[in-house]
Amino acid sequence: MKTLRTVSAIIVVIAMTAVMAIGTFAAGYDWDILNADFTSANDLKKFAVEAEAYKNFVTVKDGALHITKDASVGTGNGANDIMAVFYLENAVTSGKLVYSARIRTKATSSLFIGFFDSANKLKINCVVGSSAQGGVIGIKSSGNNKISDNAFNDGEWHDVEIVFDIANDKLIFTVDDETKTQTITENFQSSGDTFSDIKRITLNLRGGNPADDTSYIDADYIRISSGAEAGNNKPGTPDTSDATVIAATVLAAGAVVTAFAVKKHRK
Image (cartoon, rainbow, N blue to C red; front, side, top):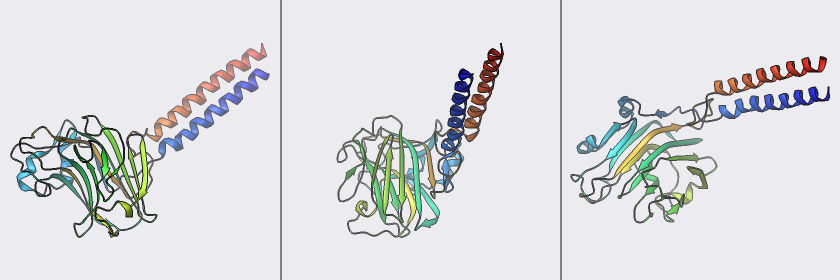
């Protein structure tokens, strides 16, 4: 009898854990603003390539957004950036904005993720550079803050999540398994700037040495959320039904074990 009670207790604990897993697996963001995984060239239509001469350098290749350049691209930044631009339908002025991407780069010139306001002013600039940033990802502000000490331009996939918590003046960066929380205010591109809104988000391959035709950026996905939570939209999060199957399997196995234990006890 004691054995039966022990077995029953174990089954209850496992079942509760499985049920709790349903809630855990369901956590994540609703990618209600943008959910582009580039399995189709149609996802590219969600982005603008503003320099007509550089449109052929922004493509979908092997299921990823692919940005590259060749010797025809001029030196210098700004006008010679090759960029994929996403325009938010409505400028974000409050609440949250979440940017999530899986990026791979071997850029010897800079990569940056830029957040611009409605007046096209650069507010927050996340940079990977081969020189000033030493190949790691950082925020190009008056402090040039590093987000991670690990190499980013190593040709490997890296997960990036940037959360603007506007009401609380928080900027939360996660790069792979490293998270860094700072204020939005201390990371403006221009010292002394104030927050207005975010309307335009870019992924840029900077202009550089024209002879440098090996730099590239790949994005496996780019997703943007208003911060609303949803069941199973976060990259890498199992579907809720997976957790349900786990719970059902555990309960079924528990029933078999219990039945066997009862039968054995009666003997």
